[in-house]
Length: 306
Image 1 (cartoon, rainbow, N blue to C red):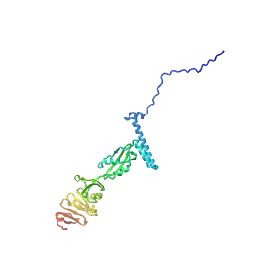
Image 2 (cartoon, rainbow, N blue to C red):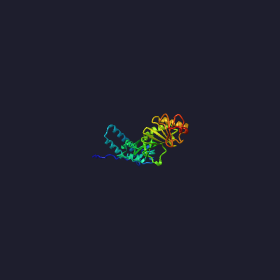
Image 3 (cartoon, helix red, strand yellow):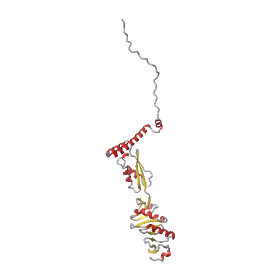
Image 4 (cartoon, rainbow, N blue to C red):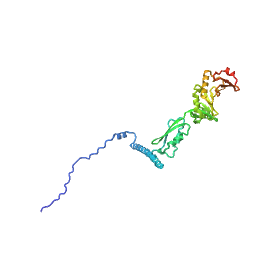
């Protein structure tokens, strides 16, 4: 009797391969090696990169929303989301200020309904700044992630305006800048009278007609909203006409250059009449007249009764 023997599947031979091999680490890229050398943690860099991406995306999204007419509440929600992501106003920069007070600028910028940087109203800040006399112009911009930059063009003082006993610093356009202390009056021309501040630009043109006399003029009074009286450092007053004031001042400068008039004891010179110069001398306010073409001398004037 034959017998069938079931042998089954023969066992596999196990090959001895020695200890398992370690997988080789991937070679670091140049960027990875550069990041490793930086004095900041990789986690911080990732946050910065994320913020940058959010900024670009947020600005693009807000711009697209504006053009597409998306409701304001949607844009506000996006702006607030950017604020929560870290783009939040917490610093104001205003370099180059000389006269304008930084704390005033800082308070104006921070007076916002929200501190989310994308929602800060730059135009409103500019309009508020322009209400201050010293501010001739202002540029306001965002500096992500958390700053507002304000660049102010300040006005330049040109004269001191005296009106109703008060002194005020003004610029060449007559804009009021700030009150002036009588004990600390700056070395600037003094303009006196109602409306004199609005005539500052014209007054500067008048002085330019006779630059030789400009250093000697210490005050100018705007009379009847029509014409100027100039006072010199030697005490005399020059009364100019309504029309042709520049030409009259130039003529007086030529006469003074040819035969000095200032510092000779006269009280005033009146040029309102184009045909003659009326000269006053103390005492008693006696009026003397001289032909515009003649040099004025003490003997000549004293011999002419007006």
